[in-house]
Image (cartoon, rainbow, N blue to C red):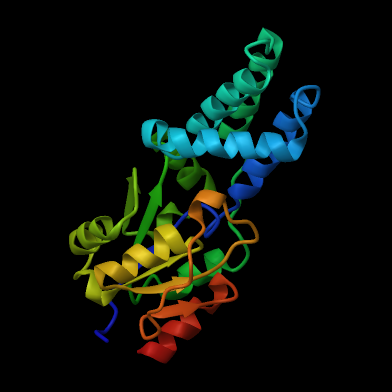
Length: 232
């Protein structure tokens, strides 16, 4: 394998909590509609709406909020009250102002590797919300480049690792999502380190890659410097 010059880091659920906030909001949503649907069935309907809408609204809180409203209309046969819609919108606004704090080991890891590698933050989702979280986290100071994209695929990594490094073959992508961070980075020719998060959104689920030489699974992000030392 080529010597590494560039490290790409995912943001949500790799550098800070994200899916946990969505789950808490989904619980709040279930309480609002408990007279119309049980929580399990409501979750199924909401996920189906998200699956339909992600191509139209993209990833993030705004699309999630619209999917909640759509689901509320569906499960109530159009009888959902304006008060409930207002509560759903308030829940979405609360998500957009939720505090951001780095996960354990994140800042120490970034400090440990920043002098030896070109660091690129690569995240997908709503531009304003992602910019807010990056700034609020205080981690932006460690990155040489920050890219907020609408989708992560092999083409994304080819382009970004060429733009901000020496190409995908001399890069490693580090993230929690097999579907978005690991599989497309491997397809692009990069190495990839999977750092699982406690919760995986259903639309981000994927099988572990067959590739074994360029794929690594780490218990937590604090083990990244050890992995890099072993590969150097």
